[in-house]
Structure formats: structure tokens, C-alpha cells
Length: 330
View 1: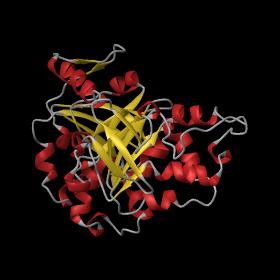
View 2: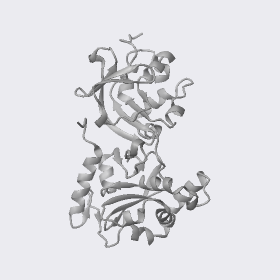
View 3: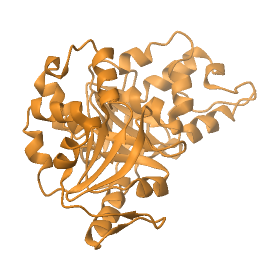
View 4: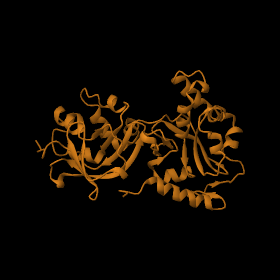
């Protein structure tokens, strides 16, 4: 049972409507002119995408044939400058130095099923979509986060430099950086709704970030900013998560991470999951989690699910789970 409708579904529905029209008019009246050339032909003819074309040919999975297919696809295309910066940063002499299976998943992380214009992304403001990469645990499809507050930015690091290059089987957006495969901390830092959580994870001498960048997998029930602000409001001495006593904050954070698991929404069942400290209770019908044994009235609601990274998955919740029956204001 799906807890909420995914933003991805809404995007694809809009994209299909756009594709069905005789020409791609976006919501601001800009016209995306159709072309007989497909994505591969356009990329091959663009001198600014030569390294991307080389990579597509070198990777496992016959990606050239895939992108020659019907689609539609949205391709986030790193420019040659972006590709060269990636090679240099990762000490690769050239494209051929990248293991071909890793290159395949890296490139598929730049392909979103469906045709998504920059206007569609801007109208949605921010959200998550699914890429074609299957680099998640058990072949799970990797998520991608976009935010349009300051340009169209993916995963907090790649900005669209040239949008809406129309192809016969989709659309290309040139980007100024390679979008590396994300771990769970990638989304925590890219999505501003988790800024309070990041403050909590990095308070004191915690090593949560290092842990959550590890192999995993982890299932993370991530409180959003509203959840942390509500917790801070109960104590007059708390302004930021670092003001919370170290023991209290440690116990709370431990309750939000289920180790050695990648529990997708479809796999959530009524019962308990063992976190880094104690057990939490899942109520699928109520869409809640709580510390095992606590009053159901104290439960947190799961408001968004299945943000998939390479080493785990994030479900967003609206209340911080506490290892205390209550916290009184001072």
C-alpha cells in the first residue's frame, strides 16, 4: 500500500501530456521545438558533450542502444568541462580508467524515465524523482533530488546550464557537474528540509555522518525541520539541536536508524524494527512509528517514503522519536 503519491508520478503524467501534444509548449509559453534527431544523435553532434558520448560507448549495458530507443528519457548531460573535473577529482586518467560496471550506474544516474522540462521542474519547486540507476541495495532504483530556488540544481551540486534541448525520444539538460551516486547523507545535505537533522548529526563529537556514508544498508526515518523545531520549542534553553543534552540527542538519533536493512515502503509491516539502540513499532495503517511500548499518541507520522540511496533508504517523519515519555520545558 502506498503511503503517499510520489512526486515522480506527477512529473511523468505531466511529461506524457507534453509528449502527446504536437509541440512541447511549457507552462510559461516557451516552445520546445520537436526534432527528428534522438538523444544519441544530438549528443554526438555536440562538441561540448564528447566525453559523455565516449562514456556511453565505454560503459556496460549498451547504453547507446538504450538511448537510441523510444523513450522518452530526460538526460542530465554533463559537459566536457564537468566530465573532466570528475575524472581529475577521482584520479582517473581518462574515461577508460573507470570500471565499466561503475560507469554504467553512474551514467544511468543521469537518466530519468519520462520527458521532464525545466519548467515542469521549476513549477514543482523541489522534490524527488527516480533515475534509471539500479545501484541501490538489491537493485533498488536510485532517487534524485532537485531544487529550483537558485537555478535547477540536482542533488545539491549539479546545476542546469543549458535546459530543454529537445530530442525525438526525450529531452536533454546540460549540467555543470557529474552527479555522483548518492549515499543517504547526500540527500540529507542537499534537501533543505533536513537542515536541522544535519545540525543534529554533526553536533558534539558524533560520527553519524561517517557511519551513514558507510556500506550499510541503513533505513533512516528522518525527521524534517518542522519535527526538530517542535522538539526545540519544548525547552526554553534549546535554540539549535546542539543545545539538547548530548545523551538525549544521542538516544533520539539512534532511534531513527535501522542498521543492516533497506526497508522500502512496500516492505513495511506492522511490528517492530531494531534501531541502533532500541526497537521502534511500525503501524502501517496509521502510517506511524514510535518507540516500542510508548503511547501511540506519541507516534511520528511517515509523510514521505522511498528516498533511495546506494547504501540505504530514507523515510521522512514529522516528529522526533524520543527515548523519554516526555520532555518538560525549563
